[in-house]
Image 1 (cartoon, rainbow, N blue to C red):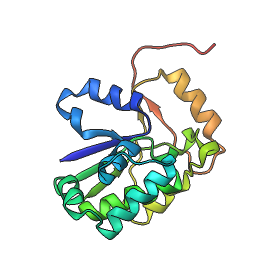
Image 2 (image 1 turned 60 degrees about the vertical axis):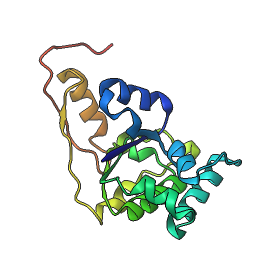
Image 3 (image 1 turned 90 degrees about the horizontal axis):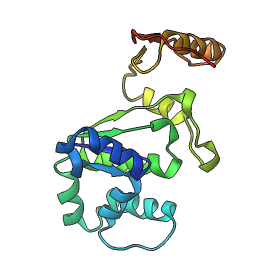
Image 4 (image 1 turned 90 degrees about the vertical axis):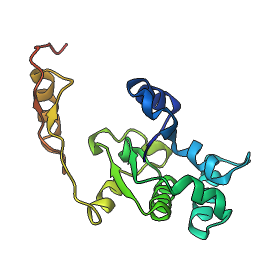
Length: 173
């Protein structure tokens, strides 16, 4: 089965609201780390991630880990550009333990969490291991907004030109 990892509980609730059949398969990275550890753990978020990563890599509490990861066939990570080093290591350990596919969805033009240690180059690290697909069709914004975004991103290395497919026109204020 597929699990979806997001950064915040608010993001998880939005995803759950769109698909009620996946309610139990949407987690924050940290809530899944708590499940891997199996008990109320004290420490910072990073300490919890490091402990969960170590448990995955060293097969500590083997039965618990097997019960969680054995059914995973796909991990989807939302807003991948915003993951930290510890989150990246946890996700990679989870994928290795589950021996499953990974879909990382993100936009390096939206890397807003550098202040907390997010590093968009993780997207580049994945490029060496998996093919990259660019989603260039924008279904949310009108052509004026997409054109403005394309102008702003034109000089940024790695930016991809988008095309608006929204029929309704809007305005920029």
